[in-house]
Length: 218
Image 1 (cartoon, one colour):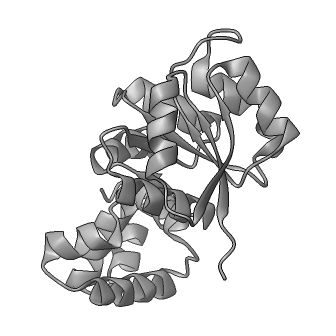
Image 2 (tube, one colour):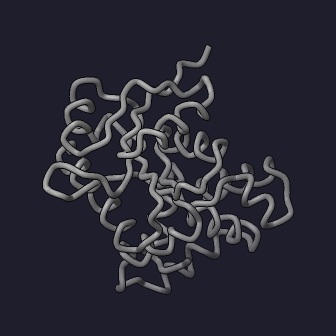
Image 3 (cartoon, one colour):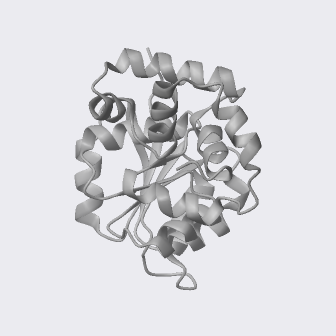
């Protein structure tokens, strides 16, 4: 039997926390909740989960919200993954929590199935973003000194279809979303992703996102 992923829900709205908790499958197990910065920092250190669902704006602490929680829990980052879950889709909020150490950012209009998938992917080491938010991260972390000749040479290793898949995956699309966008099967998407990672000598979607961002390919 697969061991459930242990999660903590950090959000200042108790009804929202209850709704998220009730919508989660058995593969995700809530071991802690908090509604303010100071309580969040305390419970995360007392009982570290595998993944934290973290709101961006919340009371307490020094007023830094989710980014402050991340900063004060920096000693946990090597074993605890943080996924921002917020109503805000503002670029400054997205960039602030990613800079502070979050591995992804999704908005609260995400459905339960997509949220569960996002938690599992972050737990496995992927970077996960709601599609329209990925551009903020790429703009903030992409370098302006790209060697275009090198980028072109690396892209030449990929087929046209593999390049399409690569760009969507790097932007944070789930396999099902890529399949729908390109009118191909999920299994075909998985095959293309494996080929892309192998050809570019990368080991994860997270590395692929950073690789694409550094080359201004999105």
